[in-house]
Length: 494
Image (cartoon, rainbow, N blue to C red; front, side, top):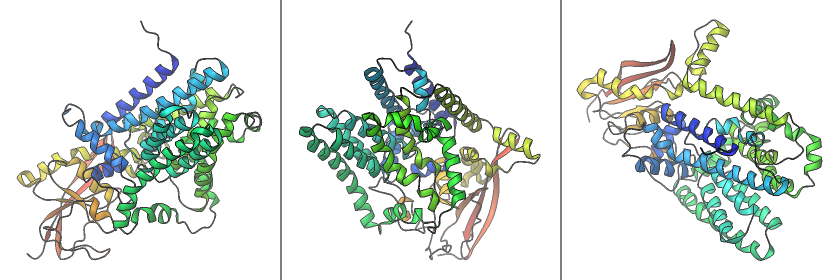
């Protein structure tokens, strides 16, 4: 029988976990939104570069014949390939370094540092961070050992995929450039920098073109509007950020930055100096930004990933560090898996408070309920079930309805912001006009959906809206999702 090495077993367990999650859970709100974008291929979108939508559209199209697979799983296969790619590259790099520097094979105590809970636990979801981390890994490989034509290809692809995934790829492209300037042989340096720059420029062209046609909406949002927070330092928010990092990165990994003996020894090593080039630019943004404006906890994972590379190869790390990281990270990933598969959070909340839990506090409830929407409409509207387009109260509800009703009925959003009109299907036969932030006039009847998280009721001008019913989905004894549906008709004919 073949003998599985630690890195093979480690990688296999992670991939199986991702497959189970991808195939059994409904779409998250963000995934459903990216799927909507994938239905209208474009050079850019209002909030992100186009890579995540392109990959999801390709995955959905290539797997359309595999009807025996859940559709949610099929559109996530591209994400699974991306996650597998950057994890496998990380393991192979660590194996090579440990063999070269310490003369030994990689062991489980090394691999646990790649178990960043916020990355591993959500590696099955199709989100822009997955192509971003693959691009990071490609640029890392290409700049770490810049020899031969392979390095040029890796740098080009890394810059291309990264810039088409998230604008924060600029940070690691800057790091790759510095690495090449300090590590690459002089006779190869210019050529490698040109390939890295070419990938960046080629990837920027679609984004610049789309934004130039849409009032620069995506660039203004990402670099200005998203980070506006008044400018005053908020230390409570900053503490909340570091608590989130202890959970998403693991306390052992976080503690490395406060471990002076390791830094004193490691700073004399060329590998550590090279990794700092990748750590410091991202840390200068994502470790400081939460002090002055709102944040999303997973943004800083791009800082902890190179720190994990450093931790894997530290020869003098304390013996307690590896089991601490492994036990904590494995426990968080297991808890996240259990909470998504079973209503454990609601059970714990009821046990702790003695009250019926509010389903809005459990974000994993967003993965449930929307699959039943087509059958619910059949029961309520019978032959008219799919005769009317569906409008959502927010982009999350519109996206979830669009994914659930794909092939049966059109679902869209009342587009009010620049750029949104190109992302969502327009309904000129049903909607008369949109007056700023107000509600439009209707020409023909439509359905309107909301859930308990985004619960705004319809208020179309000169129209009558009657609620046809409420779809309730339960996880065990607990309410998970309540979807309300109205039929709205104009009071006058056009």
